[in-house]
Amino acid sequence: MHPEIISKLASRYFSLTIIPDQHTTKIQVEENDMVYLMEQLKNAPELHFELLLDITAVDYKDHYMIVYNLFSLKHGHKIMVMCRIAHENPSIVTISDLYPAAEVLECEVYDLMGIEFISHPNLRRILLSEDFEGYPLRKDFKN
Amino acid sequence: MPRTQELNLNMGPQHPSTHGVFRCVITPDGETVTRVENHIGYLHRGIEKIAESKTYPQFIPYTDRMDYLCSMVYNQGYVETIEKMLGIEVPERAEYIRVIMAELSRIASHLVMVATMAIDLAGTSNWMYCFREREKILDLFEMTCGSRMTFSYMRIGGVAEDLPEEFIPACRKFINEFPEKMNEVHELLTGNEIFQARTKGIGILPPDMAVAYGVTGPNLRASGVPYDVRKNQPYSIYDRFDFKLPVRFNGDCFDRYLLRFDEMEQSCRIIEQALDSLPEGEIKGKVPKMIKIPPGEIYHQVESSKGALGFFLVSDGSNKPYRLHVRGPSFVNMGVFPELAKGWKIQDVISILASLDPVLGEVDR
Image (tube, rainbow over all chains, first blue to last red; front, side, top):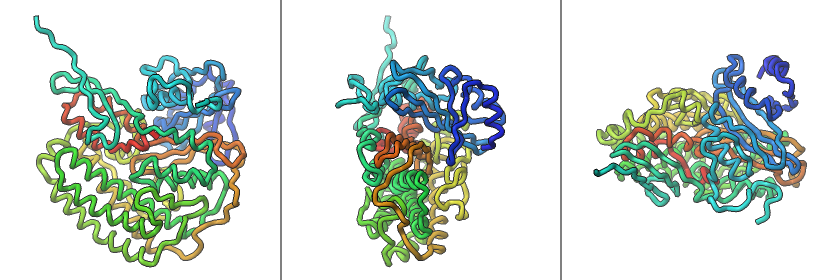
């Protein structure tokens, strides 16, 4: 992806940082700006990331990192968006109204990592049973 | 006063047309489906958690067991992720062998789709024809790596073993005979009036809806969106082969079915070219005994027979992944199923589910 486009985007968001990486375009954004950024990424004509490929989360013991992977069919570029959230009662706003694909992917993150997605239409345990205790992908999970 | 009551119809998990253990609850209004709710997870083995306690090479066999119908591609996706992180050069010959194996796997997987779709719609004889062809591919795999289903054939830096002498003639024979065998299926099934009545114009997936729900692979291309990781973000040596990206535009069950044939044709072309230009040489690159990956993260994608298969890997510098996440194409594709099935008849739900071709081992992981 063209570095100019992304630096132009970065100038619009105070909290956006570009993480240098040899494989892909990688940006990190503050929790508060995340939804606005996603809207930009999807709707701005020079970005046009209409395909949400993946949502996942990583437990870094003192914080969680939510990772979004997007692809633009129109321009053929991809981007990785990372968003750091607190370790205590982790939650983040859903993007399922922007990308319907997020609905199942966020359910998976909630199920296995225990991250609440605020205003998600149907957040439920998708892979594990309803009465399962704990979130297995957390680092402090004990069977 | 008699009143109509809402009825919930349970389908699965042991239903023969759910291709494994998938359950959905259908709320019909008469014969018309008004709501569908997916219930998955019956095959959940916690593969992502298991990855955190295995060294990098130890995890390869687990990748087979996600999509057991197209496992070579899963092997390839995983080892390529590691190679990209380490910057390992893979020998030319190994890359060619990988492509041949991956494409054979794709054909085998699409054959299962075509066979099961017919069987779901009560056309049992087609099953034998498709499985007869698939058997030949499994024989090719068996002579190469000794296994017919879960191969673990690809290794970090190359492949486990070189191709045996008899592989190339057997593979060429298979590729040459294949189009004729597919004509048999076309004669038997594609032209069948009942089959067409149950698939043509049924379960139409519009392109914008497909993209919004993150649908990838043949299901997306049957809706007219030309996205294929092999073309859009070429990996391995796919940029060297001359093959078309088949696209169809109706987005119904029939198009999704036909697109699998177009894809198999193109896979045959790729295999043919790969066999023609297969170089001599090493099959495994220089790989350290103890594989330790420098800290960082990567998201690498390959095209499986179901769609874009992604591996997201976080390394902390040790010999085990800190976090490994798999983006299962069927898992995301299934997300569109409740929306897609809405408004169709109960019998159409079977066609729609069969045409989406999920594999539950990968949906549940």
